[in-house]
Length: 180
Ligand SMILES: Cc1cc2nc3c(=O)[nH]c(=O)nc-3n(C[C@H](O)[C@H](O)[C@H](O)COP(=O)(O)O)c2cc1C
Image 1 (cartoon, helix red, strand yellow):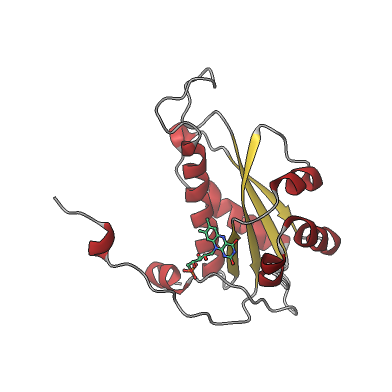
Image 2: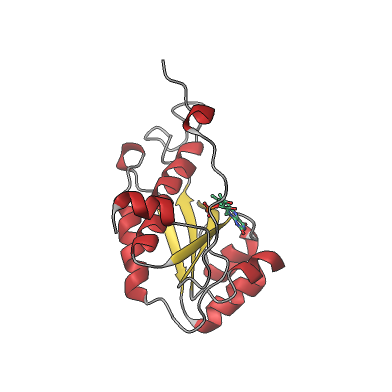
């Protein structure tokens, strides 16, 4: 798909086609797109936990998401939990001293860059995604055995779309940018 079209057509999807399942191969393509993103000193601290098996999918949705998000991703056939290794991006080589005031904010920044690549690649493949920031991190850590040195950030559902959501209103260029 043409790049501009991918950017404009991607929507947060809250209704998925229950008949069509996303393959592990496709999820690998999404992760590979994420890997191409830039990161602080090429530190590449993003980490992904990809849930595809039916039993685990059901458990993660039920145990780790509030009811409204369970509904939003009900028929999504994959869940990707996104995390990053703390104290690396934005830190000196000792992994203790933040290089500037943002500290681990840079790890989250890098993960966001990775995740944008991931969701745009999904759109390019005809898949749909929903980023969810409202989730239970303790349950996710326990269920997926995510190490303490990784901060869990978002949960992204992936599947085939079953809806055509309208584009929410966007700010204008002059609302958000200053030209000097
Ligand atoms: C960091 C982040 C957290 C979000 N959390 C949720 C969520 O928990 N549940 C949900 O339904 N949508 C969630 N969204 C989706 C936003 O509501 C959506 O991106 C926004 O309304 C713009 O719509 P669009 O993605 O279709 O352009 C989240 C989006 C982002 C980027």
